[in-house]
Image 1 (cartoon, one colour):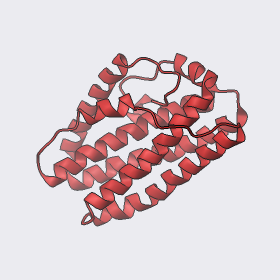
Image 2: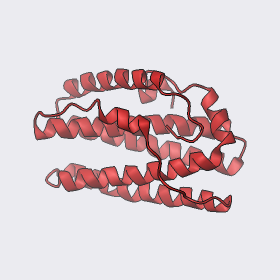
Image 3: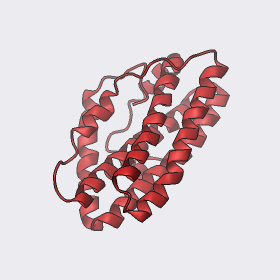
Length: 197
């Protein structure tokens, strides 16, 4: 799951995992909402583009998987005597939404959304890898390994779907642009002890 596999231009600051481990309750709460939002995002794509049969077929099981991740994070919270708490503002995703190109054809709009989803999955995958390798809690380490593998699959799904609905060369060009813009966002965001991203 190194940079060249996920395509990310800027790796996460290595200090993040140590901060995350010290604030694992907050990280788990934020993670639960990330999984809920991932399921909701896939549902939104299915509802907005029901005529895209391949998309509907590919993303329907992803909805179930993301929701099952949400349930599994709730289980990890419960085991530790923690509670879900309220959702918090996701500055990372808010900033990513601003780089989506507006207008264009229906397929162009779809591809923008698919690439942003791919990017969020890639960054989540990278963070899960750091948690798997870096935290001492053995159960959570194993949990994050399993989720890392799953998110890597979702990341590939979104990229593959984008290449169905637009010329592959154009998708690759836009993907590189988005990766560059995400790296710039990452440079500007401070390390937060209570956020997965």
